Length: 261
Image (cartoon, rainbow, N blue to C red):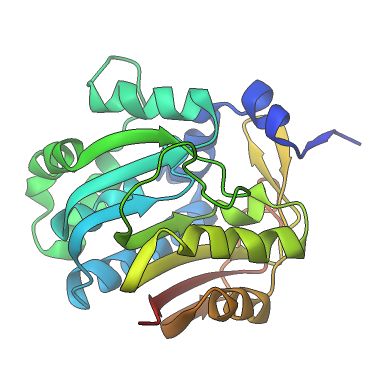
């Protein structure tokens, strides 16, 4: 049986940013399941940040990975975005995209899709530039620490966003509950927590490498969010699944919660 990578050191040594991006975000015709789930995430982020009007000065994204799709709606609603990730290679990949270096992953099909949701597919070049302008920092984070951004201490943010991170960063349910609380500690009272979670999965692939995913059910996510001091504003569960060879999930779950005053 192939090895499943679990720990922090495994991510530092074996996680390939472009392998991961190609697996899940290429929008290629033969990636139908992955495309469906990406669209699920994009539509729910569009609802949160554009239709529902969640906005403010600062958004912190926990576990950004090498991806920028999660910022395509948020960049319209926040003055600054702080991207974060545990691994050096993911942060470097994002910096390379921000600097427009050759050989980075091509996000333009995804950007065009979001521009279409917003009503003008042709504005995709402007959208990419707005994302680049809005991302002010790319920081190291470890969501298993009480302050995920330690040793830095940042002012509380208007919104914390996290997509498909906590379930891969946490080895068990107590660690997961603590991680939600740790991420939530970065939100100011009255601010928002936005999560997209892969449900009932035990692994995902990045290229040829297999990584652990914590098995989570909707109730587990809800309870962790409430225990962290948040009220759930809305949530959406869809029984959409990845291709069996890249992830064995049984659904996707988007949630918006507001921190109690």
